[in-house]
Image (cartoon, rainbow, N blue to C red):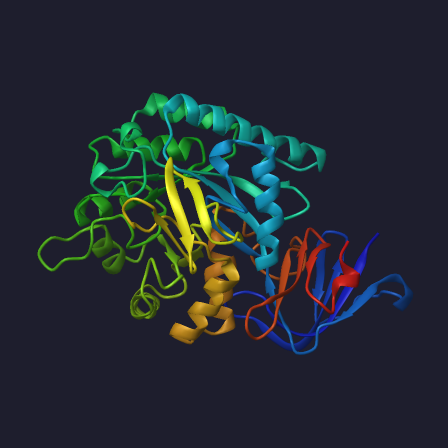
Length: 408
């Protein structure tokens, strides 16, 4: 039995609860109590002094394509393990693996491979599917960013494989992933998108509106039919216009649905980030990275979505066109930017980076907040949101000095 007492940090449990200079008690893989001592003997636990630091729930990145030179479209165990180990350095304890558009045959191969990795790791830990962990963040599932999207807003997606919704193909994708397909980006501009949403519900796939030329009316109808929100809000979707209402108009005017936000100040400017928080509110925003394989790597040339992409000075862009090609930020950088731009409080940051993604994925009963009985997935930050310590399932897997001696 492993027990920890994390002493003296400011604990931000969820969107509301906060305990200044409080203690957190953990036993094995579970949070036992917040600021209320259990009946432990002093010799039976490890005490870590976190005075001057802050404890968040572990962050959940629901939109990440890769890192450290690896891309989830490889469909490889090495890609999963590499990204799992990389993102814990940012305070991320769980993520969804995002795939760019592929041929249907290749898509099925990758879904089957990643779904098998998720299941094999889950069974080894005695858990259900979508609980994979590789000495790093949990691999919760897969996000198909397409292929049933609009060519007009394809961004980097390979136009050869973009097509109208095919329910038979959707069924094949879900079966290939073996229960690990969690999210799918689609465009409600297609006439049979309602049938696609119903198929997603059947297979417990959250349908996210994005890469879409849909009108506001078509978007609202998709929300009526059960769509869950918006993939990287603003980016690659019909904009808000005073005479031509688009997807963004629906996001502004209808309170339903979560909205992913890439808070890197490149995909979305600082002014618009601040405006978005005012209009949408922290209860609807989900911070994401949309990170590509150049994340955590030196500047250079990378392959992403079948294109040569340059990473330089904190930005990724297509070599031939200069178009933005994903981001290279970590989730803690998103926190830092949100705080600096919008003066978001820590509880609001927890809501956008932890609570909301857990709720979207129907995992809030297990992760996404610091509450007794939940998984001991936590991140410890300083005031700049540099990661000092990351714990996944009650194991300390990442530390910065002076906490290196506690790494397991």
